[in-house]
Length: 281
Image (cartoon, rainbow, N blue to C red; front, side, top):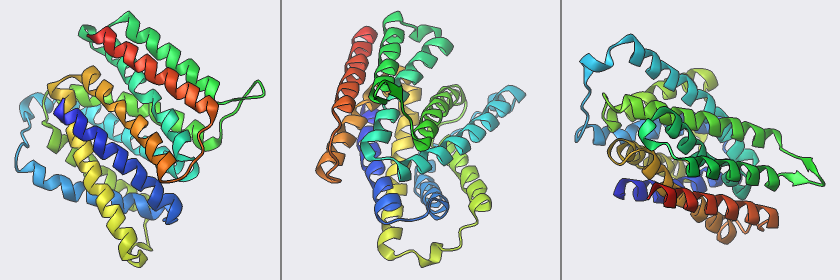
């Protein structure tokens, strides 16, 4: 429970910082991603000294090595789509789409982990998906921006990666799993984007990105501990509190007006999540 609550708070602050740095301070994605991944790695290192066990004998099999590599590939793709979406979409828009992630994770967890199967949770996922479609209806036509479509693809990949995390956490403790994953992504994005303007970033921008990395490291390591110790569904359900907090921040800080359809859709998704929580008991 504690790990999930920590992840909720840091996720809310992190999403807000993502929007501030990418949209309001207009830092290019190709400069932002390598720098934030550097700080994610940096702030994960201290956690390695506390709990960094790896069961090498069990992990070093073709099955889990291939699963680890698949996790890296999926993480690379969804991070690209995520940061493009954060930069292009309004806070409420991308957060509404990201609200679908918990329910996709729950459905996948029910498929891959028999002990977590529950028909009521699957129905909740279908209801929430319909609410997402409703939120994008304009004059009886389904309207998604290119960035929104990218975010939907991103959410699916994020959900798949969560299932991969749960399997790998049987052999690798949360801190080394997240650190090794993030370090490989850092190296990849440095070669992909070859950032040249990093040294020209202002101290304020660099400080905000560093803070973002600090919050992100805490968030994801806390998530991983939650997945391992409390289970995927319980941790995921706790994390559904984050979008509600992000909506509140968007209204109070970014002064974004709240579209009625998105209020209705968000409410339906939230009620679906609560229904899923009740089903889990």
